Image (cartoon, rainbow, N blue to C red; front, side):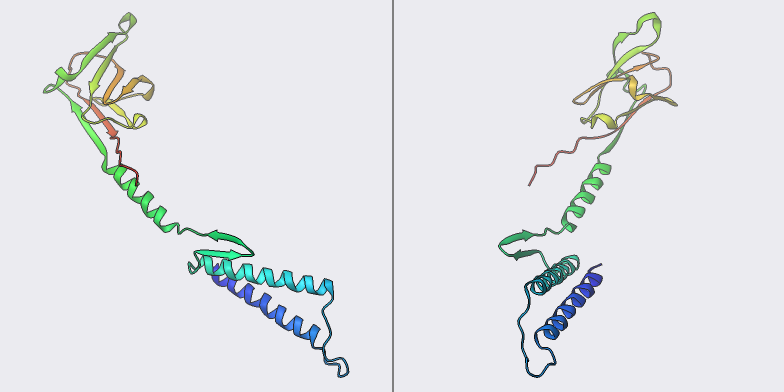
Amino acid sequence: MGTILLIVAGIFVLLLIVGSFKRIFPLEFPRFVRPLEAGTRDAYITLGALAATCFVLALWKTGKVTSFEIAGIKGEVQRIDQRVTSLAEQIEDLYKAKKREGFDASNWQQVRVIRTLPKGEGFELELTLREPPIPNSVQVFRGPLTIPPDNITSIEGNVVRFLTYGKTYDGNPIIVQYYATVRKPRQ
């Protein structure tokens, strides 16, 4: 893209030079130099501005220009590479923060029953995770069954509450997968 803009800028500059020389220096012998008319002068100024704009854009696309000043207007172009690298690092940190905790016969005492649903339709259980999760990243499995996201009633800090079918350990462990909250100080 930068090369194309550079070629277009070169064509505009060439048209500007050839046209202005042809207009100012005609091949007529008695009148060797004649002034530019107002309309012609404005056209050449516009052509020159277009050429300069294309040239600056071409250099910007190739990364050779980071700031410019034209007619008292100052502009600065920031490199996006640093932002992309920063975003990639943040995504890697997020994936590193994925946790998996299981509650089975060995630690079932950590599972608390909060309430029994009406008509014996199930129970609301509460688990305390080791680290606070990002709220929408929590997935709860009861044995082979996935607890629907709508059945997760609350997430406060590292405490998760959800609705399920039983309050006692029946051989089906509860597995919680989540992304832990990663808070880094802003620089």
